Length: 280
Length: 292
Image (cartoon, rainbow over all chains, first blue to last red):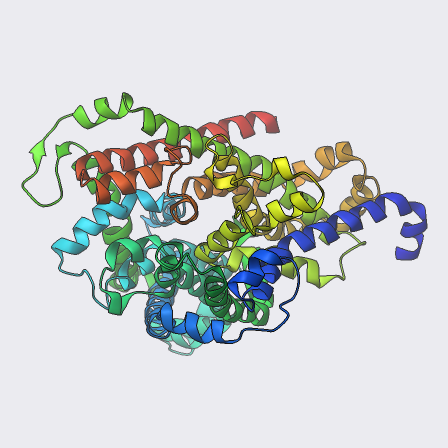
C-alpha cells in the first residue's frame, strides 16, 4: 500500500512532509534556542544569538539555581503536587466508582454537576477563593493549595475514571457478590486493579496540572518559604530580568525534568486521554 | 444489584468527600463571587451594599470592554487556529504517510505539558528587541525596519500573544482528534485520505461529519481554555502596554489585588463567567445548525 501511495501522489506527500517538518522545527526550536543560549555570557547572547556558545558558561546554572531559590521551591512543588494528586485520585476514584457502577436517583445530576467543573473559568474564582481561604485561616499553609488543586482536578479525574469503568462488564460485581465481597471489597479488590491504566493517565494529568499551576499559588501563597516552582520562575520576569542567560539557565533547569517526565510517560498520557476524549 | 440498593449510605459516603471538596473550592467560590459583586469593598473594612452600581460602572468602563475584546481575539485565534491545525495534524499522523513517525506526535504535544510560565518566559525572550530570534532573523535577511519591540507595540501585542497560545495548545486538539479518528473505520479514512491529502472538500464532507461530536466538544474546551488565559499575559505583558493586551482575568486581578476593589473585581469575575457560558452556548447553536 505504502509503495503504491508514494508514486501515486508524490508531490502532495512531499508538501505534507515539508509542512510537518517545519511545524516540528517550530515546536522544538524555541526550546533548543533557550538551552543553547543558557550557556553563553550576556555579551555573547547579544552578539551571537543563533549559534552555539564558544565557551559554555556552566556557572550560569549554579547561579540561577541559587538566585531563583529553585531548591526550596522544588521541594514545595513536589510536596504540594504529590499530596494533591494522591487526594484527588483517592476521592475521585471512589466517586467515579459509585457514579459509574451504581444506579441511584441523583446520578444524572451529579454527573453533570461534576462535568460542569471542566468549564469553570478558574480565574473567576480567584477573588472569592482568596477570601474564603482567608476566613478559614488557610492562607500560607501546606494545605492551602491542596484543596483547590483537588477541587479543580476532580472533574477531569472523575470523567476519565468513570468513562473507563463504564466499559467494565456487569459480571465484575456479580462475581464479587458471589464471593461474598462487600461493596468496598469489590472496589478495592476488583475495580481498582482493573482501573490501573486510567489511574495512570489521571495521575499524569493531575501531576502536570498541579506542577504547572500558577494563579492559585500566586494569590494564596505569599510566604516565600512556601512558594512553588512556577512562582519562583515568575521572579525571573521581574527582578532578575537584567540577566537573560541566567534566566535561560533557570528555565532549562525546570524544563528538562518536565520534558523527561513527559517523554517517559507520554504513551500512557495520550492513550488515556484518547480513551477519555472518545467517551466525551 | 439488590445488594447495592440496600447500601444507599455507602453510595452517599463514597460520593461525599468528592462532593464536599469540589463544592467548597470550586462551585461555592463562583456563587460567592456573584454575592461580593453587589458590594463596595476593599477586602478588609466592612462591606458596603452597592446594588448594581459595580455593573453600571463596568458597562461604562472602556478598559473592561477592551479586555473582553482581547478575550474574543484569543477565542477566535484558538478556535480558528488550534482546531483546524490540530485536525490537519491528526489526519496526517493517522494517515499512512506518517503513522510510523511517533516523533511528530511526541513533539507536537510537548508544548502542552510545559508550564505556561516557562512558555511565556521563553517567548518573551524570543520576541526580545535586542537579541530575540524574530528580530535577529529579520535583520539577517535585511528587513531591519521590520524589527521592533513586538510586545511593546499596542496594535500588535495581542496578536503576538495569540501566536504563543496557538503554539502551546494545538497539540492538545491533535491528540483529541487522533483519538476520535482511531475509532473511525479505516476504510473510510483511507478513501478520504487518498484525496484528503489535497482535497479539503473530501475531508470536510467525510471525515469532519464522522467526528463532529468530538469537534463540538473540542470547540467548547477551546473556548473555555482561551478564556482562562491569565498566566501567559500576566507574565508576558501584564496587560500592557496601556491595557492593549488586557483580558478579563488580568483586569480582574489588577482591580482586586492591586487597586483593592474586591467588589468591582468580583463583578468582573461574574462577567467572565457569564461571557464564558454565553459563548459556549452560542457556539453550540452555531455548530448544531452547521451539522444539519
